[in-house]
Length: 105
Image 1: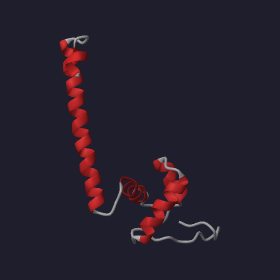
Image 2 (image 1 turned 180 degrees about the horizontal axis):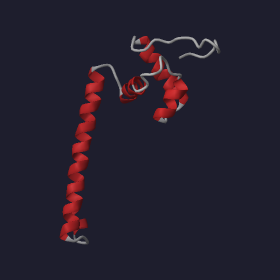
Image 3 (image 1 turned 90 degrees about the vertical axis):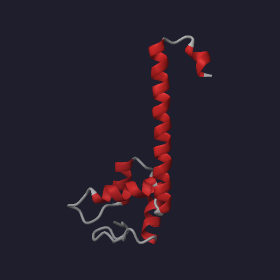
Image 4 (image 1 turned 180 degrees about the vertical axis):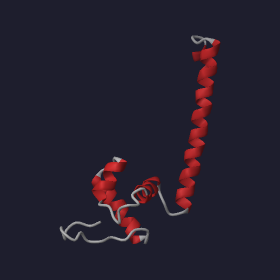
């Protein structure tokens, strides 16, 4: 397939396309390895990133789900479900807001 397309490309462009495809293959393998690691540790990329966002706020004792959602550009319903699973798995502990009793941190 590449040979058919390569007739319209210079030798340098052909090399660039092959190099780009090789990089894409390496990235694909890396993503697979990361996903396997997360799976083996009962995590997902989102679950891991939530924990990273929380860890990067050392001056705060808690965050609201919507604050984490903004950092990760994730819809609130997805964030709520994912955080609930982290709580169920014992990786997070919820607490009530002192002012707004309906809100959870």
